[in-house]
Amino acid sequence: MFEANHYPEEVNVALSDFLLRMADTSLVLGHRLSEWCGHGPILEQDIAMSNLALDLIGQARNWYQLAATQLGQGQSEDDLAYLRDAGQYRNLLLVELPNGDFGQTVLRQFFFDAYHFHYLQALTESGDENVANIAVKSLKEATYHLKWSSEWVIRLGDGTEESHRRMENALRELWEFTGELTTPNASDQLLTIMGLTPDLNLIRPLWEQEVQVVLAESTLEIPNRSWMQKGGKNGVHTEHLGFLLAEMQFLQRAYPNCEW
Amino acid sequence: MVAHPDLQTQFDLRVAEDQRIEPKDWMPEPYRRTLVRQISQHAHSEIVGMLPEGNWITRAPSLRRKAVLLAKVQDEAGHGLYLYSAAETLGTSREQMIDDLHSGKAKYSSIFNYPTLSWADMGAIGWLVDGAAIMNQVPLCRTSYGPYARAMVRICKEESFHQRQGYEIMMTLAKGSEAQRAMAQDALNRWWWPVLMMFGPKDDESPNTALSMQWKIKRFTNDELRQKFVDATVPQAEYLNLSIPDPDLKWNEARGHYDFGPINWDEFWEVVKGNGPCNRQRLEARRKAHEEGEWVREAAIAYAIKRKMKSEK
Ligand SMILES: [Fe+2]
Ligand SMILES: [Fe+2]
Ligand SMILES: [Fe+2]
Picture 1 (tube, rainbow over the protein chains, first blue to last red):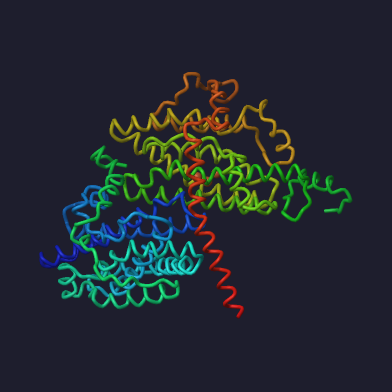
Picture 2 (cartoon, chains in turn orange, blue):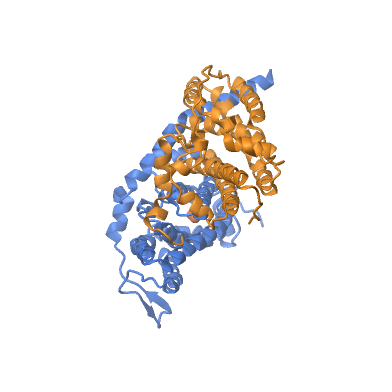
């Protein structure tokens, strides 16, 4: 459990916004990965994807608990996860996209991990010790996740003709959702000034470097389209999130105020 | 022990003395066949068994329940993995076993052909299905074939966690709202009889039991295990204040056991034959995962070969 830190109203609003984004992003990606459970292409990788999902759901719980603490309205982690609608969700668009085939899941994971790893690393130096502590704990897991997803992107990109073609496909599907990862919104800007979160503009070159190296080794080319989708951070999502939440929140919505 | 010229006699002696048979030891062909059948069937049950509970991971009602259920279903994948490895020590490949599952030649536990219709089914399955599995499997930790026995030791530890978690779900629901209680009772009503069938046909209709007992692959008969399970479970249901759907269930002082009503064996054999409510969906889901994963497995092999060639240059 966390001890709340006191900030001016405006900063606390931005911090809560950031905390919910971290929580929602981890939860939604963990949820997507959990959809693979029992349906993976190889038993060992079925297990690996459940591991990623479990790590991310665990991280989401830490972020939700801290968000609830900073919000100070007596909400629980489950209130935040189960009783907010899509417009209140703050996750990055990339993670709510459907799994597609295994190649698309792996590439989505890699794009996310490359950002997540560098962002968490910088967050370990946050001026808010609660944020820094969660970042330290999550970083160990994110390091392993990045290794797993990089290896699979390379293996599939440089595997067979079919796997290469499928990875090109996945690239076309996902590329336009990567811009949002490292584009700051108003909350980010304020928190960076306050020394609570790193400047995402400084994370971008690290992400690009990571992606260039891995895609080159995968024999895949970076698309030259530059238009990027955005909105998740501000609660404007793709059509997919509503369905995901309808499924995830069903019991809490159908049987309100119960212990589970 | 003293070397004996006759391999069969030597084998019989080792089994009689409760020594483990290891992969490199000589063993009679029917013993090997029985083991491959039983271990692969067990492995398939773990893997197919992921599906009914996997259904509810995306609908789990709290973050804690979601994580616990996902970890449980992941454990079952791990059990499948240990068991396939144990069966491979007998000379049958995982590929072959999976093909036999998909062609319908190999069986898996019939219980997984029943649908999971509510969240309470996650409780009932953990409590009753994992509970029945433990009854079946604890004696297998002393089974005569070494790799199987060792796999079972690891598996049984995790299965008892699963059972506790399942019972805890039932407890929460039984103590919850009216609707939650009804959900729990309904799940018990639907799972009770199929779970009793998990122990297999009655002893006088179980052709494999005698030999398996003689080889110490099995240590108790189906009926013995079923009785043990009923005796252990009735008080647990009472503690939950839920009623077991069997009007004939009552304590028999003379026997020191619970008597219970007749099992619907026609239903059992129909489900075994493929006519359970979900047989087709379960196999279809497994085949689909396998077929859609083909290109991934091929790419992994192709890439490994490329890497090897590069490193040898
Ligand atoms: Fe299991
Ligand atoms: Fe089992
Ligand atoms: Fe289990």
